[in-house]
Image (cartoon, rainbow, N blue to C red; front, side, top):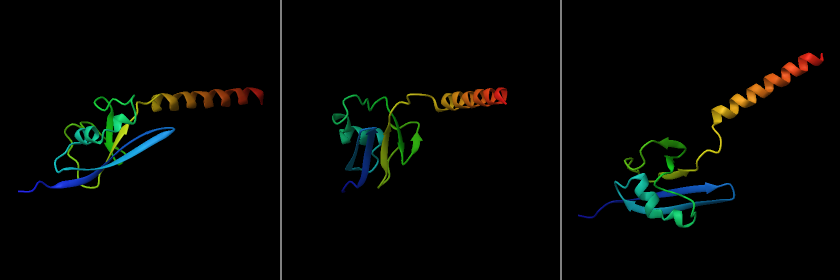
Length: 107
């Protein structure tokens, strides 16, 4: 019996550098296994594959070690956020409110 294989990609990006690695893996390979097999961490020494958040085509997957890949899927390895987007929006709204209040004072 011949084991079936599938073609997948593993991607990681920094602001100044990105890499997409194409691989052929056995059917049933998980996201985490594909990331390890890609050896993408050799291109990005700071990357900790075991601890990184991952997704498929922009959708985060909570348990990459359990999620089996389908042919043609791309595993995306995500960087940690520098700032919480909700907090940034709150700060922006507070600043806008302040500016509006300041503007009202001057009228």
